[in-house]
Length: 115
Image (cartoon, rainbow, N blue to C red; front, top):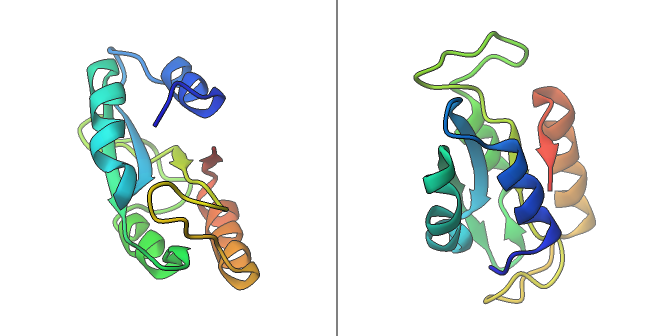
C-alpha cells in the first residue's frame, strides 16, 4: 500500500487519543498495520477470495456492534472500510456488481466511511 489519498484520509481521521477501528481486506492487513497502528487505529481484517471482499465476512465482522450504538472506547464501532473494488493488489481481484451492491447495503446499514 502506498501513501494514496485513501491512506492520507484515513491517517487524518485517526489520532492517538481516540481509538478508531478500520476494516481492511485481509490482503492489506500487514501493510495497514504498519501505517495505521502507530496512529491509534485498530485493524479489523475481512476475508477475500478471487472476487475480492466477501460481503458475508464484512457482515460477520460487524455483527458484534449495533448500527448507531454509542461507541465503547475499548471496542469502538468501526468507522472506516478501506477497500479496492477493482484490481486489488497483489491478487488482481475485482468485485462483481452483486458484491458491490451487497457491500453498499452493509455500508448504508452501518454508516461506514468507504475509502
